[in-house]
Amino acid sequence: MSGKCRIWKYTATDRDLDAPSNLEKLLEAWKELYEVYKSNSADRRRWITFGCGGGVDDSKNNPGLDRTDDIKKGTYQVLKYGVSYKEKCVKRILYTALITNFYPLRTLARYFDDINDVLWTKEKYEIKNQPLPPGVRVFYRNGVFNLYDAVIGLTGAWFNEDKLRRIFGFNFLKEKLLQ
Image 1 (cartoon, rainbow, N blue to C red):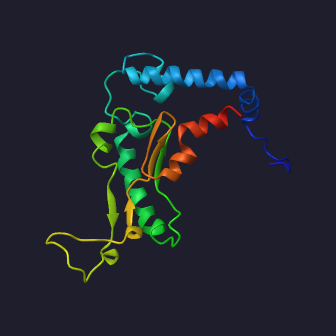
Image 2: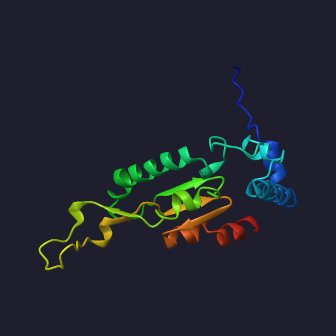
Image 3: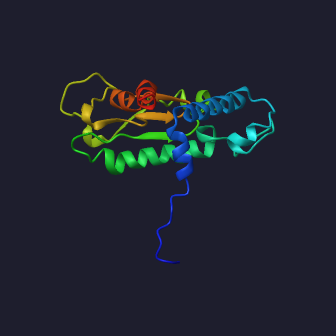
């Protein structure tokens, strides 16, 4: 290799996307491909979105969080990050989120609807020596954590933390894109 610096390979793409009309075309193309995926029809354009043009799929070829393996791995990583870092952050300013290109369209009801509000804690955060009804346990609020503070995709999102909604919500992104 000579002493020359490598040039960013996407310079032309960056330049093209700086033009608002080109960015608009890109967003329109993205929307069109998303609608093709959403319809679940055997449309050749599906190959562009995730490499599977057929109607039968085992989810191994699905994009984003419609891929069940990614949901499982991501959920473990969110929990591990929470235990390893979020819980240890004294200021409680670290958050956990699954971030993806495609929001879970096909898997949302099956895999997320019943766990999107799961909380976790540890016994050390329990408030003891207090009279409580049988079967009731009380924990310090700063010792109870969301499993997911957010799931964020380019095609949708849900938030369990308002701060993340303000930062990553689509209204904020729309404002930034249109500046």
